[in-house]
Amino acid sequence: MGALTTTQVAVLTSTQVKSLSSGALAGLTTGTVQTLTSTQLGALPAASVSALSTAQVAALTTSQVADLTAALVSALTTSQVGGMTTSQVAALTTASVVALTATQVGSMGTSQVAALTTSQVKALETADIAALSTGQVKALTTSQVAAMEVADLKALSADQVNALSATQIGALTSAQLIGLMGK
Image (cartoon, rainbow, N blue to C red; front, side, top):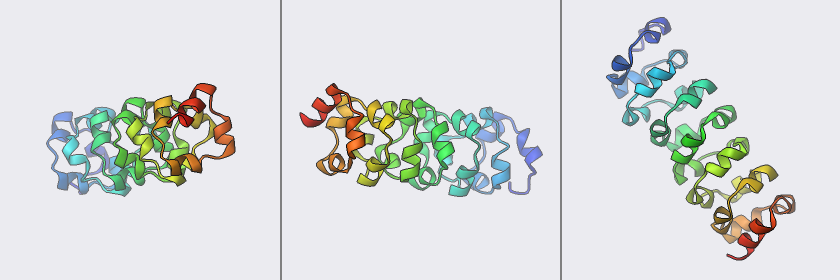
């Protein structure tokens, strides 16, 4: 498969893309991966996505990342998620963010967590918030902390709460603060 040119890969039908083996996907160059259309990406079997290297996932354009289905995002390995650029993380749809597992969220670097939009933070599930490391909690912007649901704040561990800065605490609403303290 690696011998195909980007022009050749660009004309593959979704049926052809769906039939690609994990080995064929792994053989695509990063340049070839960038030619996959949203229709082609949508045709990828979720079970095959883990065959993509971290470099291949990192080569996806932000438009391609935005086009990834929730099933494809949930099939990414923690290495693949951890290897995404901050721009790619910010390009994930809220449906894709909901599809992330707590383990995937925990694999994100602090800069990736800081790149999440407030809508994405709102879309994180309580288990995802609870999986954040103290370093990730420290990396949250005040806008991100303010976007958290009361249930999310209640799920924070004592170490996570202690990691919040005074500025982050100051961004909370009264209801959020009561929820945080009323754990």
